[in-house]
View 1 (tube, helix red, strand yellow):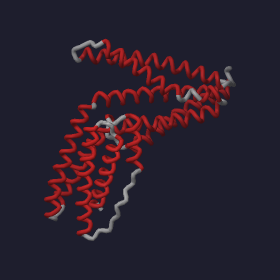
View 2 (cartoon, helix red, strand yellow):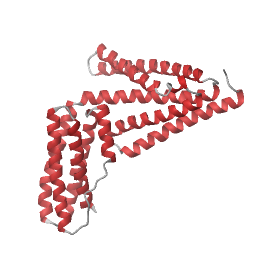
View 3 (tube, rainbow, N blue to C red):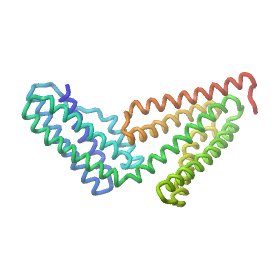
View 4 (cartoon, rainbow, N blue to C red):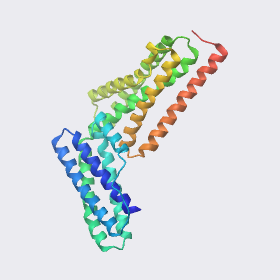
Length: 300
């Protein structure tokens, strides 16, 4: 029932804002989040009273798994990237409440919803303002994640193919390292040219910002590339490949989560699609390596 969804949604929002505030070091932001949590709790009590009024059975249990995952991501990457997601949640609440207000014949609910919608609009404006304040940090976070994800996927796909045709795990490591360095150089040059061209189009030529963007790209690409290579230093190649795939899937899930949240996507769907695509890519390159091995044997 829609009212139960509203009730559970407000409870979840209250919990989420409270937990974000509990971990927030910025005193102004912490105070704002606590205020939002209190307001959402008041909204939940209103919907609870409506449920009681119409004798609708309900419980106050909410699933916190997704919310705790979001809090975990916030602890890893900071709150800047999640502000846009919170703004989107408030916009969705305004839309849903407005539709419900048009449909209901209960004058008490209509009247109260006017106040609730006004609260949600204020929350949305607060998050828009925060989004503008944290925009530079949010962009840095996304760029970092993109760089790590690119390095991870490209190098892992490469070593998956090399595993089939190289006899020694250390040779696979060396081959993967060459992939990583060449990819890092390519991405760094691309980031420098792209940033410089963008600044020139906007009417300036900030050499420092172009160099900084290139350096950030190089650093995070290499960080992402190193993860799938580490096991090949110590372990046999097939065990190393299995561990590398597990590490890569974990990191890709984190990267896909940040990208999905930043773009207000469907978190579960976007993560599953990303994991499926990277799995298909790894399997495809591994099969290519095995086919080459079947016809040529180990190269070295």
